[in-house]
Image (cartoon, rainbow, N blue to C red; front, side, top):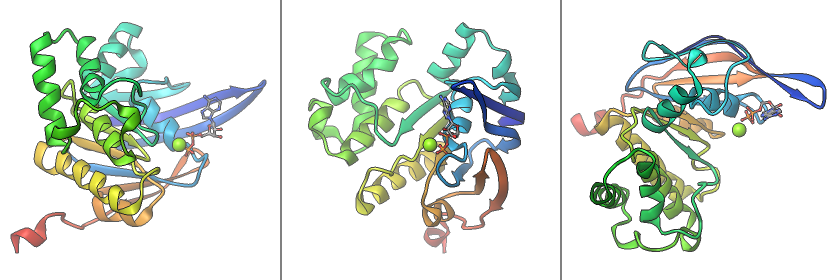
Length: 236
Ligand code: ADP
Ligand code: MG
């Protein structure tokens, strides 16, 4: 469903060209859970931001369900960002002085959803991520795990088919990280959401993913397919 073809991203840093992504060709299949690993500075966030439409390629193509992001107008790209992808970040990026429910409602305001529906849907999403009792608390007063749950609910607000997660557990202790991973796995397995996740933790990537890309110096140096058949332990 998402394809990069010879995608290159060059940043100009104080007059010097820096190749953040170097001629990358790869595919992200619908409904799959794909992780991107690699050392700091290898181009992981650049890759995710290109897929999320937050940044544009210097050359090459990015194709989402047959549509070329690299050919979209500003308006088309805005609509794509609003409806097709949901993003979550290591630092949560919530509006800190607003309540959890306000944060989840926000993307729906820009999507012209009616007031009633916005509230109902935000409440349902917050309940789903386990924050039914906390939805009127301001996000600044929430723990990291709670804040990331709000961010996941917000990412789901406009029913995206893909969640893009940039080190979503990077600021969390290991127990909380597990809970957040369980939520992402649930979205993937039970709701068919495609998840593309950057992580530093190879063991997590291996456990949850169908496919793992390793980046180094802006290139994919390894593609691993796992065969961990998540959920089989329940079937047996
Ligand atoms: P990672 O997420 O793997 O740590 P990034 O994609 O953030 O790596 O960065 C890849 C390279 O591109 C790094 O050398 C980084 O300094 C550079 N880079 C990223 N974003 C920008 C930017 N907005 N302007 C200039 N250089 C950037
Ligand atoms: Mg990064």
